Image (cartoon, rainbow, N blue to C red; front, top):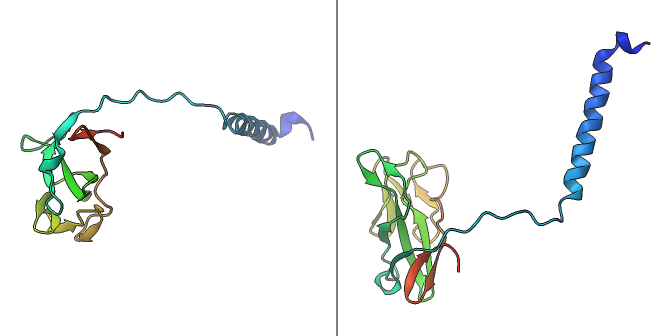
Length: 148
């Protein structure tokens, strides 16, 4: 069997060798520090004492997307206890409608969906997944974007 008669076999062998070399290089680089993206500067959202336990609050999202109807994406803040505030995007994971606090849930009026405020998990309706989490922390009495 000459190489001229089996170019596909040769190409497959060469391709397998190349994949193996790339895989080895990837494994060898696993322990190295990868360059990290610069962190965005934390921004103040609201005084922490304005968010009460059991009363989710909507606040403007810095750099939020503009949505149809000239509305902007917001952040839903949920105080779990004196030291913990959780935050979620108010964009429904079903159709990007605006979720707002309603009674004891976070409600999307487009398809009557409800989310659990302290976890962002879907309670009822068609959304396929929980609300997107937003990193926030408390610093100097303010709810701030990002992690501490």
